[in-house]
Image 1 (spheres, helix red, strand yellow):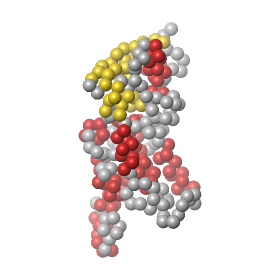
Image 2 (image 1 turned 180 degrees about the vertical axis):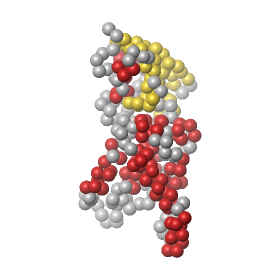
Image 3 (image 1 turned 90 degrees about the vertical axis):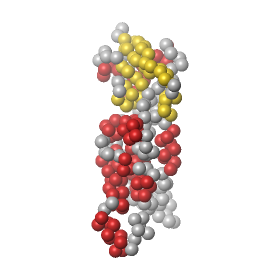
Image 4 (image 1 turned 30 degrees about the vertical axis):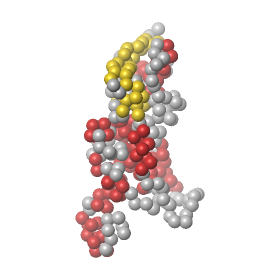
Length: 247
């Protein structure tokens, strides 16, 4: 039977290296299958995070041959007999082997100002279908954090930038027809949206094919520019006697 050569990173925050394993190839095998077979038969202490094995939970994120991917969606036969290198996401602190500390994402999510409907209005809301459809894309996110991992600002600059995942979350609120809160100041000063230079690398790795850059980040950037940097808007606010927050 054909074998698959896997080179899996083994180690923790103090250091580590790849270790080679070989497993029998089976029809339809994905990288997660191969890694779990290694765990079951050769390395019972191999740390790997996974849950549904159906690309819905986002748990099995890793870097496969240098590219951030879901292991459960990456078929082994796509590599055609080549070595498969499996490593942890590099943007986050390593815990052990393929498991990283992604708590940063939950910490920043809790900081985002919540959905704020008009005073006295409660769900269920009456909305136009076209407005509802616009929100569907944002809610497809499975929080695999591959977009966060590939973001060069998070990975290289170590700035307190919220990252593409949280900008998608903010967009889902800002584009909601029943939300009344202005998050422009938050986007500028806390989420630091200005750090993003729209390379679209986050969009390229999204397993749900969310147009993160075009449909979330750019519209939010435009709102911040209009609010704080557009000279015409600034003059208009001066004439009307309003500050940059609309007060």
